[in-house]
Image (cartoon, rainbow, N blue to C red; front, side, top):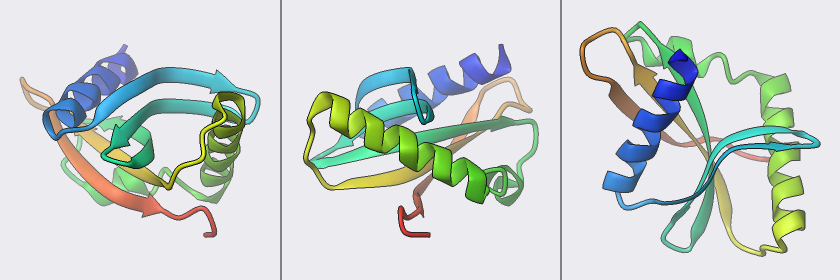
Length: 115
């Protein structure tokens, strides 16, 4: 439930920032993509992390090397399936769920495919 609320909050936050959400909770052979969105001409794969802490670094540390490999694999599967050839990046949105209102923090280029 917390994860779904965080993804909804992140989606609204990104839309307000000008992103166009094209997919949510997409399961592919390589893994799961929380959000896929266009940020202008760039296709962005967004990992959403929910927590009850204001420490963004703690939440970002959960996107470790094995998780990055799964995200990259899922992103490659998505691009192949949809036959999309675009510049891409991986962002993270950390959603602080500790207060009455969710607070979202965007981390652009959270990691690169070659890391």
